[in-house]
Each structure stands twice: as structure tokens, then as C-alpha cells.
Length: 177
Image (cartoon, rainbow, N blue to C red; front, top):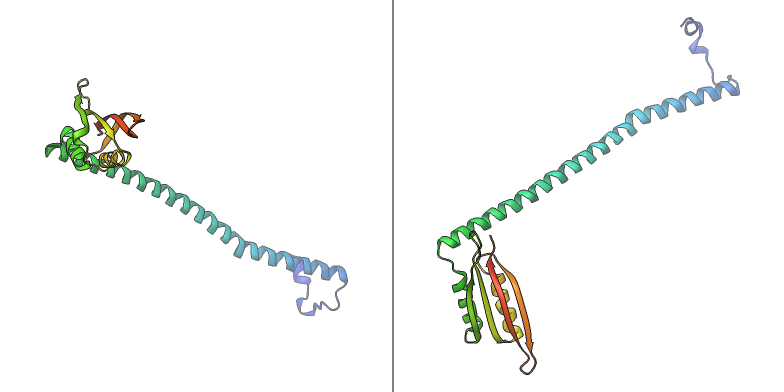
């Protein structure tokens, strides 16, 4: 540190410095400017970007949890609706008969019979309808799909009658849930 005391900073004149000294001073100035930019500008930007990435991943995880909770809530509400529907006397057999009447195909029903299963089996009904037109078929299955109870078609057998261009349909519908 003694050498700094011996330097007379007031008498330093860059115009009198030779080329090598100017180059060293310019290099030092560039180093100081780059160091300052790195510490003051670039490092905080990189930290901010890393924080944004962490925040984005956290929000995506939270959104996934929200979707999972929403699905669980929807399933619970549907289960409550099912329980409420069963308590109010929903009958799959009666629902299918009413649906067939609404679609105007009740006179062409060959049979509607409950399918018996083991203990704990869900309510299942098998239906056979002869001479069903395609639009009636679509309406019937749309009614099953939009029923107040969650229903699922377990088996479906379609046979086209060539002479009438109609369908003979046999299907099983089950209460899902």
C-alpha cells in the first residue's frame, strides 16, 4: 500500500501516458463497467427469471390440484344426486318404459326385463326393440345419455332388417354409480 501513497493522482495526465498505460487503464475501465453491469443488471434479471420459473411451476401444480379437486367435487355431487334419485324412487325399468313412450317406440318393444346379477350388482335392464328407425334409435340413446341418473349401456346388439331398412336392437342399460 506504500506505492499508492507515492502516486500523485493530481498530476496524472492521460495525454502524457504512453500507449500501454492507456490500454491498461481502458481495460480496467471496461472490466469495472462489465462487472457493474453483471452485478447490477444481469444477475438480478437471471434471479428474477428463475423466480418466475419457480412461480409458474408452482401455479401449474396448484392448477392441477384445483382440477383434481373439481373432479372429486363433481363426482361427489353426482353421487349425491344418485343417492337422492334412488331415494325418490328412480326405477331404471320405469325410466326406459317412459323413454320408449316419449320416442313413440313402446309398441315395438319385444321385451324389457331386469337382468339379475350377484349380490351388490347394479340395477341392469335388458331391452329388445324390433323395427326401430335410425332417428328413433338416436333419440332413444340420447335420452339414455341425458338421463337424470348416470346410466351406461353395457351391451348393444344391432341388426339391420334389409327389407324394411329398420334395426332390431337389443341392449342392456345399467345404473352407473
